[in-house]
Image (cartoon, rainbow, N blue to C red; front, top):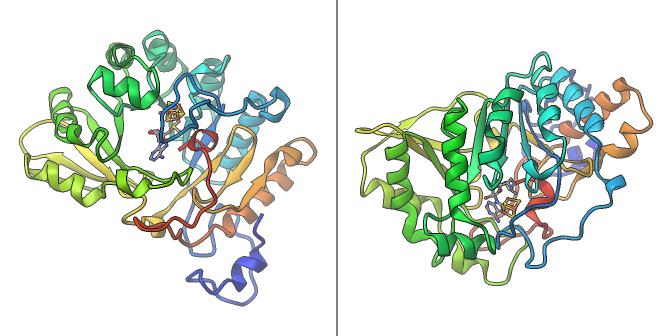
Length: 350
Ligand code: SAM
Ligand code: SF4
């Protein structure tokens, strides 16, 4: 874990002023950013093996004792909400494969002060669980979908069935959930020729498609050849459709959003690599193993497991406040260089 003292000494982090510091009562960092969004992973396992996220053989399955129990995850959520977290996204791995996830979501949705409970899924199990998700109080889903062609979808996910995801999308709407936002990771030479098709889908379904820059999480050799910058993705869509910028709410993610001028639906562009949104970053992550991470591309992490298993509510809250205070000011990834330690995205939750 990075100490506040170390963070204050680091001249590369803008906005760090020497001088006496007191710990804020909420989750505010040394750059004045207020953290209100928690991405909470409930598993690092998955029923797919997307090439950009997992090694071909999958990951080594965590021992049950290494994973946080639902009670521990709830305790983290409850402390986080008491410190000002307004939005929790449940993620993974694939969150819908963890047994007991629906009652867990039901309990989370009752946390006083939690305004948004949302979940990201690959959609494979959505057709059978959509009604339960709605009943548990989940407000909205993000569904990852990288191709509308069955063969390409299967190649990207190493065996996934596109039809299952499409059935899941329909089931979500039928269950009374808003149409899921679709997340497409755009990769040059793999699925970038489908960008306009996805924009058409957003118009037809009146939903939002978010185009995500491919991030070299595992730092695969030659990742740049698959990287398509957000501006190029946007240009291709804007060449075809008239777009109007829309401003998202305060708990919104890092997406730049647009609506179609002449049709329902819209798009979002997430430029994690080519255009950093660090200055407005309001999020932290907690992995299924209980590691809090304040920046996707920084190594600083705080192991909450021993704290959960041996300290009071107050001590845990203070540890979180201290951890958030030292959140790095910015990451240093660019389309040309990635300075981070390689990681598997499924382990951290995207
Ligand atoms: N299994 C769920 C799913 O796929 O939606 C949730 C976990 S997944 C790790 C969360 C998000 O991270 C997905 O939208 C996925 O597309 C995104 N993601 C994973 N690896 C990525 C990468 N290398 N670059 C950009 N996005 C990535
Ligand atoms: Fe699984 Fe989601 Fe990673 Fe794909 S992106 S391998 S569905 S965790």
